[in-house]
Amino acid sequence: MEQKQFQAESKRMLDLMIHSIYTHKEIFLRELISNASDAIDKLYFRSLTDDAVGIQKDDFCIELRPDKEARTLTIRDNGIGMTAEELEQNLGVIAHSGSRAFKSENTLDENTDIIGQFGVGFYSAFMVAKRVTVRTRAYGSDTAYEWQSEGVDGYTIDTCVKNDVGTEIILELLDDTDDEKYSEFLEEYRIRSLIKKYSDYIRFPIRMEISREKKKEGSESEYETEIETVTLNSMTPIWKKNKNELKDEDYNQFYREKFYDYNEPLLHLHGRSEGTVTYNSLLYIPAKAPYDYYSKDYEKGLQLYANGVMIMEKCADLLPDHFSFVRGLVDSEDLSLNISREMLQHDRQLKLIAKSLEKSIKNELSKLLKTDREKYTEFWKAFGIQLKIGVYNGFGANKELLQDLLLFHSSGCDDKEGFTTLAEYVTRMREDQKYIYYAAGESVTRCASLPAAELVRDKGFEVLYLTENVDEFAIQMIAKYQDKEFKNVSAGDLGLESDEDKTALEEKNTASKDMFEEMQKALAGKVKTVRLSNRLKNHAVCLSSEGQLSLEMEKVLNTMPTGEKVQAERVLELNPDHPVFAKLEQLYKDDKDKLAVYSDLLYQQALLIEGMPIEDPVALSKMICDLMVQ
Image (tube, rainbow, N blue to C red):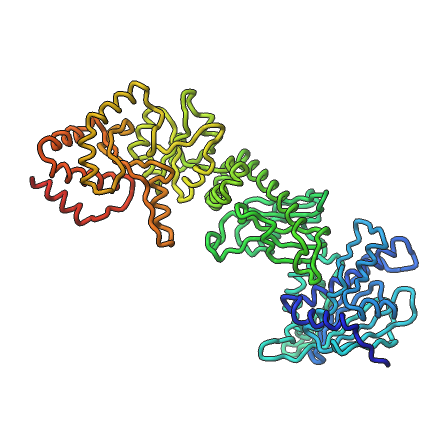
């Protein structure tokens, strides 16, 4: 029996296969089972036109035979087998693909899945085996052949005895080391887990004989060994079944089992797309966010399958960040995989699939918002922040996609904890209303209690209450909704005053200009300016801001662990109709030192109203006590 050598290029490829190409050694079983499935598919395809094949579809199967004593794992199929020439081509020349050639030479029907493309998966066996033996007999041949190799040193081919058509691959496993336990691949639980993970949806049954100890009949102490043949794979994936065959409980059970969530999903999306890229998808929106969802440890992504064989556990490229909460899978026969079938050669197909999925998810959420508000609100409480972050990220690139999915607390909701959409807000706007008004704070109560918010409500206008850190950043990124600008009740002109009111206020500010400069001097740069305001109703004072950075945004940014502190351009606004203002005018004339004290006190009060930290609580306490005893 002649020892043959691999070609020089094949030797290098084999060495690369063993040491570099595959990320995990366990992949070998996926590859060998996929090859076995290919072989069966070829014979099944032939049986469609050749009655002489004599094998019914239900008779095709793949068998696994672990032998702990011999340290061997055998993968056996009753597929088309190989001739001596095909053995030489398929196993002697690395990267020659019989499956790829078969696909190019035949027009396959929709029930025939040929998985292999590159002809290299077989050599992954050498990651776990010191010797690989292949016994095969081709359909239509009376002669069987044995191919054997111990790796890069070469291989032998000889005739052998094999009574049936098909191929069996015998792996003699490497010896265990301190770092690697190759014998784990002979354990029932490990084999089951690998089949479940990678090959659960191979469409032919994967079988294995299992030994079970049971008590002998009529005996309490004697046991006997019973051999049971079990099927390890599900074969038909749920996502390839007709929707009419499935109930919600079928989808929910699959979700709980596949994604290890004891909660039932909020909803599922089961679809198939045909066109430039053909794929099946089964997506789920969870009812609750995972414990680590809003942490840096969370890893987004969908399971990616190629013809029912899992290629990637989490393919991040299939989901945009704003929909990263979605779980599920995609199965496509059109993916261009690299030679290890672990990654894609290029991402054009993924981009097409991802764009289609994004549209489907958006449509499903929009539908839920319109048809089941209670369930949508449940979704919003779990993942709404992510949609707002999606509006803000990328300089607003996704705001048009996401803005109609956003919910906000509002003074227009009967329920304090109720929500409104931007579209709903706009439909309730008064004809003379120029802006979409909002107030920002850490709670609905805090927002509602802001002096300016009180004034806007009293004028009959609805106010959105922004209670999440990202809210105002998202709103500023949207800028306009249905041609209506957003207006922070604590910043700038609210558009509520008549020209006469503005003129009157401007005259009052001019008259008090010298006093305001004195107060600003006393505050030593804490505010940009002091002025009168018509935005106050019952309160004496409030803080507002000028420019893009609001007071609430200042608070948010200063909580971030960057070490850098920012400050909005603060304005101390006074109520000209409040008795305190008259007191200030008197002090400006009679006691400028006390005016400085009152200025600081009003500033500290304004900070408290805005929910901002007091710079020196001890000094504030002393100031109040000193005034109380005067």
